Image (cartoon, rainbow over all chains, first blue to last red; front, top):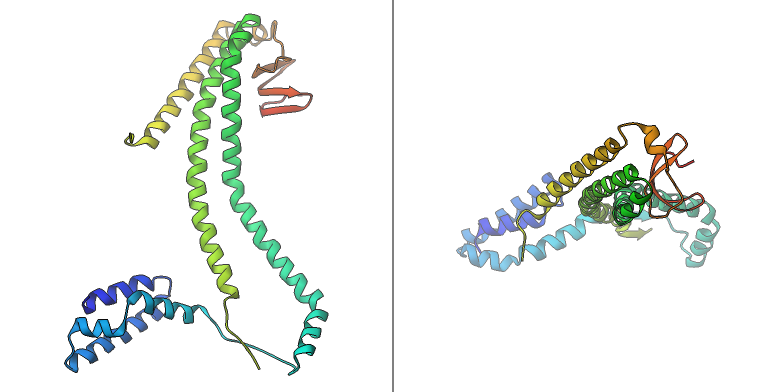
Length: 195
Length: 78
């Protein structure tokens, strides 16, 4: 692997990082490889010495996603625990509110494909009942029987459209949910330093 | 066997079904002479397999499974 390939791969694996941070690392590794080459090493050799771009990106992203928090401490472990328990009504209610807010966001997002899915099942079931039952209705009332057959056929078409809408929306919302999960987990992925 | 443009073909099929169904429904209304009073004649709403219901002046689409229990409900079943 030459320098350009290495930097391209590194840039690809660092795509979740913001551009200014990413460029900083790209320039850093670019200079590092150039230094090795100036000292007589081949480009491939320099790249091999630095290591796999995937592994480097993983390490960089680990550090990038973590923020050091300074937590005040009383110095006594037991006192810390007691204060945490006493403070539960405060931080517990905030945590509960946060969790319920997250849950409500998920529910609102998933309401749309749920509604289209329910519509699909409803229309499909009604259409089958309508088509099968239409000859029996025709015996009693011909116009309603024919209209039932027609609405039954149209309902199959509507249920197909709703089915495709459900699949497409679900695929998109799964991606949104995954990204949201990563961001939420990222909020709690911080290095804690107790002073 | 993989069908090319399966999704596109299904969407076209569903649109054809909707149009065909609408035409048949209009034809059914045509059998009644495009007169709502003729549709109401001999109309019953108690059969579970009936999806077009005519109650007094209300026309609704859906399946009546019991009192106030409906599977799909477009229109006013009351």
